[in-house]
Image 1 (cartoon, helix red, strand yellow):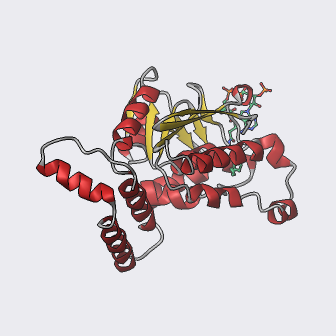
Image 2 (image 1 turned 180 degrees about the vertical axis):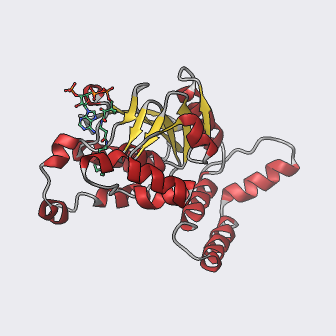
Length: 257
Ligand code: CO8
């Protein structure tokens, strides 16, 4: 596959996707977003890849939707072309996505970061939902995911004022896993991704699915879902290998079966 707006590298067991529109601070046009989703889906189908890293540049993970493109959109275009369905496909990616985030992480860029499963931020990262400044509001999950992550009052302030927060504030409010110097954020994300890549892939996949389920379900239903995934793992070779390796005091050799 060829991509115009992103750089994609398979470094098994890692799949690395870098947003690459430096002149516009990685503004998200629909083609870029489609490429990100296509690349993640391709990695989902590639047995060599176990964990994805999604990153941008030191200056910008992404400054949000491409305002030039978005300004020409009509509601009828958005409905007929169903362009936001890309976000539904993104939500269904099965393998973990580690966000390695630096610089401007705004609007759709912040929403894209919140679609990652773990976020490592550089000290220079700034998170914000500035849509209100251009007469719109978040439209790709910002009002829901930000609110569930940092709470109603903080989310309300960010969304109604458009004022971004620093990486340290984001860390304090639980929007990122950790903050490291700008020279180190990608490497930190890579180390974490490699750590996860060593685990049993089917267990990783079902665990991710169960954690995400908690956003959509009442507790009882979520617990049932978790239990079914847990039971399912007892049918995997990796479960037998993991437990055998533990008793034999050796590292497990997981095969994803
Ligand atoms: N869209 C298009 N171009 C952009 C964007 C953007 N979001 N952000 C920056 N650029 C361009 C600038 O126009 C400029 O281009 P040029 O050199 O040709 O003038 C270049 O990038 C560099 O930007 P600045 O000169 O403005 O750089 P500064 O360092 O002065 O400022 C800021 C950086 C603060 C990030 C500033 O560029 C800014 O405010 N950008 C807009 C941020 C914003 O409002 N984002 C939200 C957009 S709306 C949204 O995300 C809705 C999401 C809906 C779902 C997404 C579907 C795909």
